[in-house]
Image: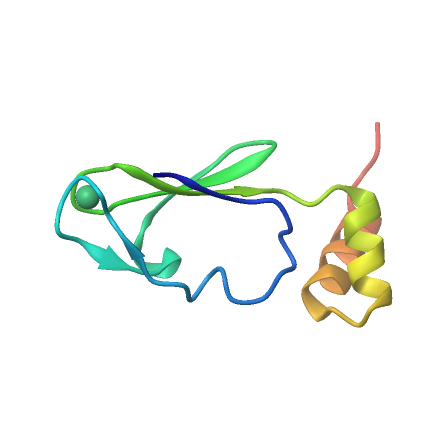
Length: 87
Ligand SMILES: [Zn+2]
């Protein structure tokens, strides 16, 4: 089963240990194969490439809310966005 994380800023999803249903592998997202997309990041089993975790990227509203709540990662992301050149 692929687990979807809808709230990027919820704590713990990076460290949660997942059991691959397709092989014997288990581990957390840091050990998985990461594939970055525009809307989401997918994490797959490093042994068999079974997709284990899909993390939805935060939109600006979520980012601002998390930053206002004191989330350092969100604050850094907003700072990066503010520096990015606009068309
Ligand atoms: Zn696997």
